[in-house]
Image 1 (cartoon, rainbow over the protein chains, first blue to last red):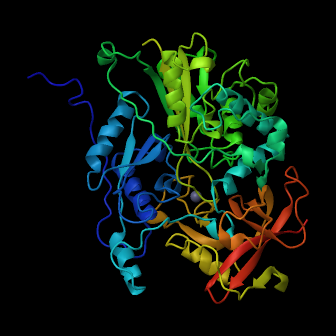
Image 2 (image 1 turned 120 degrees about the vertical axis):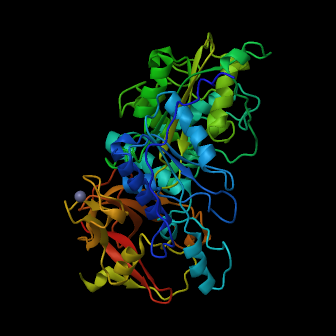
Image 3 (image 1 turned 30 degrees about the vertical axis):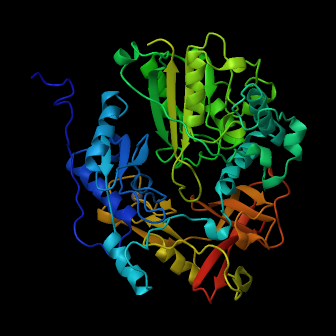
Length: 400
Length: 151
Ligand SMILES: [Zn+2]
């Protein structure tokens, strides 16, 4: 039987092992040290590592599936993506399968895969307090809860605050984003806020929860589900629905450079993600017909408008105030109503809308001749003192 | 360090407890001694908070070329917000409270709530000089750093 084209295309080139009980060390330091040793073993440097996957046993109690402030930031890797991959004890195999796709598409030359546990040490400690087994699992390394960093808006509102202080952006300008997305939602019967239009005065009069954020700067709390099927372009041709082809994908992490430059309160990690995604697709920003920006809060939309280059840094406020993202504007942004007005299913809210726009199924809000749509995602563990790190960019197209 | 930079609170703690682990234990021990520690490179002097391997050169195993050192405990306001709502019940007696991001004189950003008489006049009013105030909780066995505007 002939070899599969992927056979022999990948290799493991470095290994780092920390063996034995580590009672006086944190999991993230053991993780960082194992990664450092693997990089050294490969004869590489931290700058060569452009992707990182954390192989982590999920399940069990509390937040054991994720700790904040990942080893990638501690060690200072130049990774454009970091996330957790695994299912029970099936870790390395799944992680490698994931990593290969990044290598295949030229997103990373070197991916660092790492798994670390300190369950034995932690169980010894919690046993002294009367707990048994895995009772120690909790959110580790989270800085601010005890001083009032109670929820996402407690630190995300710094993004709006810093942008306002540095660039003179106003609350009314942030409100223009909220109003524009609500206008789009009036053309989407699935949107939670369908039939409930708002004005800028409604935004200004909505309760100030964590100033500068009003209630109407914040995304919805939702129920729901989105699923999608991915296959090869070859197979897609014979199926009954119009395919939305994956034209390009890119990833960036704030912890790579933006965090060290203290720019994460005015910028997102768009630069590497945009370069990768648009490079793969062979397109420019002006080719994009419609955008679904991740919009957990209004300022995130503003940052991305600037970071992608729809306008200059600091000019996003004037851009949205002039109606550029609203129905009838220069670039349709968050046409379903987004997380602010449709529903909050992470970046699946935007992805579902992008597929509909490509298929021409978006009803009243359908963007004319829509051939290229960009969807972004944002998230990650909270790194002290407050940031979500990852930015993802996916470009879907009507023509392969 | 004047006495006014220390507040002692004996009331029962009803908020989430600090998440103290191997990587920040020394930092929290320092607070109890009314010292604000930052993580410094012994090779090049670069300052980090929270803990990190030095970004400027190769490191020794487990970042053994780094250590905690006392910071000046001063900095300036980088950004802040004003909580009008208590998202966690332990804070309901404190609202409104100002939760600030402070740029230490040594470089790193640290966040905590503002105490003392002075507050920024509006969201555009940043850059004020601040100093750390140590809030001792002897019954709980920890000290919390807060910031006060001094200029
Ligand atoms: Zn150094």
